[in-house]
Image (tube, rainbow, N blue to C red; front, side, top):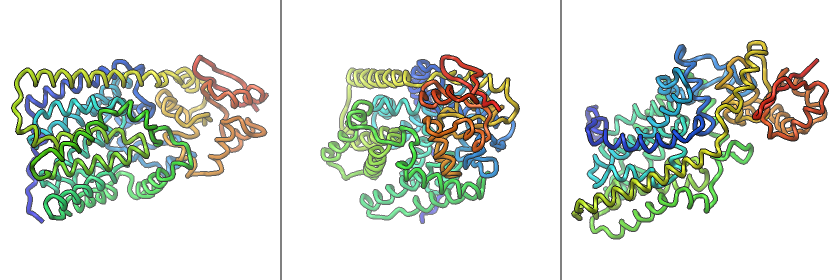
Length: 488
């Protein structure tokens, strides 16, 4: 292996060019947030609330999902570093703080991609970075969530830089922190594996150092972990569950887009990939390692996107990076006048603004931030501390938790957390919430130990059963939700 020093990588040295790029990216992403009625998506309510609790304790006892694999004895915060990084934004108004965090993290990821291109001498690096916003409205929507995907992309872009610059030893630190950040850390091995193959094809050498140091960092992150050794068991079961997504409906993000949807929300990303492939045949120079590397990553994340829409948070970025690296030798031979530069800049900015506007349109499908605010406040004020609340939908937990940590809940964050902990109880929960079962109130009290039930108003079958059950007494209702007390 080549002897290296641990000097600070150039990607971390800022200048005015980076500041200007940051302002443009942040402005476009902030425009999306300003159209939101709350936090973009659903899970962000949980993340920001947990980060606020961590301001006083970095590893708080998690008591709110006692029937699941996230019970107090087995709980693992598999996004611990992300919550630590959210802490500065989790004081005061949590919704505003979460929105600011989403802009900051997404800007960091796209800014790092621009810096990578500039460090590699790609002409128009800033335009390519802004072009990532133009490439896919779904990508912009996903990065607008106060979730880990923006920082995950940042980690992978930095990994790409370190590998291309032959600073593989830094991958140990990157891998270690990636494990703390997000349970998608195996993606670092995918990136390293693609790099090893690309280096072999272009340079005729196997660059195993990238894979070795990445694996070493991941291994250290798993062992030097605030939740070791429980995190090993949790990671195994969580990843296995995601490989069998047909067993439990875990949310639309784990299922693929239709061809029409993909063309509509990511058509320019697909066009960038095709344009990059065209440029490979046009250029007269030997294929660069960066182009081969980004080409492989585009294919890898493209295949992932075809199986799960959540990988739209990666594919557009790497498709644009591939297009930029593929066109680099062609563009380097050209001289562009001021008018052409201004025209290209205007076109990219307009396309990025259009994509941001389409992402804003997607926000209209988000549930209101205060959907369970009234029900949560009633429960907090009228039920004993720590009393159990039965809910009719697993993804209602994030808003309930956001407004009310006074009570504990049935299931949340992922339905497989209850299914893995108690398959029979999970099946019963599904039957009850869909209005099946002979005695709803008795089953809820006997098997879940709950005296209170909260539901949105869309579970018609359940609500009909509840209204017909003499043991159910409605104690709260608003335009979004209803609370029942199960009487003796």
